[in-house]
Amino acid sequence: MTKYKIGMSLLLVVFGLLSFCKKEDQPVKEKTYMIISFVTGDVKIVRKSESGKTEEIPAKVGMLVYAGDLIKTEKGKIDLQTKTGSSIRIKEMTTLNVSNLATQEGGDTNLQLDHGNLIANVKKATSKQEFKVSTPTAIAGVRGTIFSVEVDPFEKTSSVKVLEGKVSLKPRVIAIENVSKEDLEKQPELKSLKKIEEKEIILEQNQEGRLDPEIEKKIAQINEKPEDTKALQEVSKELEKSTANLVKVESFQPSAELILEKETMIILKEEEIKQIEQGKNVDMILSQKQEERKQIEEKILKKIEEDASKKKLESEKEIQNFYNKLEIVTLKNGKRIIGAVIAQTGDILVIHTPKGIIRVNKNEVESQEFR
Image (cartoon, rainbow, N blue to C red; front, side, top):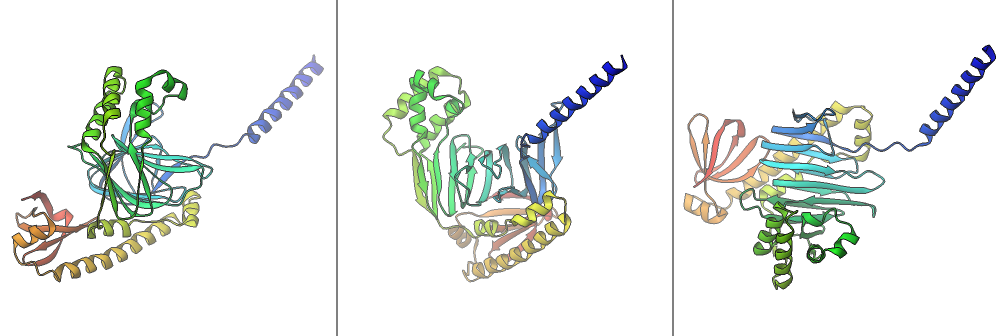
């Protein structure tokens, strides 16, 4: 009996070792995430726990954001950087879903912008990687560029501006996103919509692209109810007959505010990302980046103020005509400032008024409205 027990014990040890070796041989799946490198104001990370409960977590510098998280900004901004070296800035009043994140080996980074505005500085990717920003009606795809995407929360329209490099822009049809080639062949209306989606336009530096308004309305209509077969059939027929260009392209000159946003994005170097992953020098690296950002911000703000002062706009009408807007900024102490906001940072508004250029701390602002 004793020999039997010893024999069984040896067998269990051997099986245990084999099982351990097998696990060791299996490749460990890389955990994908983004690092928060800058945050100001009210920003929340909405995350589902393992139990399925949804919780809102205040965003903090150094926090990790994972695929599946939702990012919501109100009066705040946030900079994040992927492990593959691409950075994004999510501006005020924006909701963004982190649908998927690429790894060093490959895959797609797909960010779904429900509404609001973001700027992306995308590191040149390998042939196995892709970076996409999806809106309710469009998809912007890149491999190495700087661009902005905006979704109007009221009109539900999308626009893409390219600051450097090139971006592909095409309609997004939700109904065909997870449909196999075989099923597309069986459903003519889906096959027709697939052809529409494949008609992408390449935007180059200083070009802005947006979908044709009528086409975008139809795309939005079917994306709200992608399971409505009848609506899909009707829209696919209408789009087949349409002679309009799917994407409208115009030239634009980056505003001072857009340049400021681009230049003050925090970019972590590859070695810095590795150190943060290992938990080394995290506070030192991130605080140094905050200081560098402040210095760049101050330099650009001074340049914006100097350039604006040279324009000699001395009345509200002159300011409105030049900037195509006139705003009333009401402070918490009751004071009203009338002019045009020409730049915004994390904590500062730069306002061109008839009496000159002034700076206002955002914490002092009660409200902003167009006149």
